[in-house]
Length: 205
Image: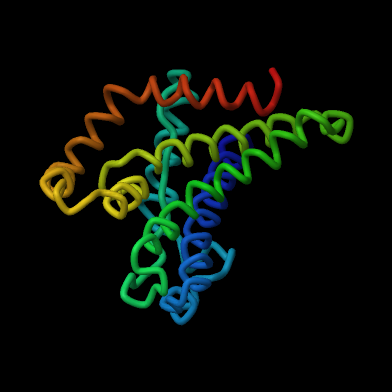
């Protein structure tokens, strides 16, 4: 049962993340996501069979067997056309930031509810569910803010980099996936330590 709840939380969280990109893009004049029917929390239009189901299920299963470890997943990226954004300078950065910001907002809402409301009195299992929502969303927010393609942090960085640093952008675009795999397999524990710290600050444990 816990396995199913974790998958459901992760799917909802990545869908909320992608919809947030589309909502901000739409508010800035790009209706691409809306025209494609992607401004919906219905998970079906957003699901990526590999990233939303197979990879998360495998990682969660391995974590339950071995204890701890990596949990991540993704949904189909919401289509965004930067050419339609009214804010040509920072529009793409705003759209990219919307995803991680939405995950942090979810973590904050459920974390503060867990801290200040008698959630456990309603049902003890709700505490575990709320904790999972907080942790998974903090992890998604932190991970996606890393400035490595194709993560959101890279789009934010590229929007802010001056033209004189175009070599940095070229390097990251060329070796992004390699850097991402190195980060996941060798430095994921550092991200987890940061997420644990923020989790404790919000939840108060």
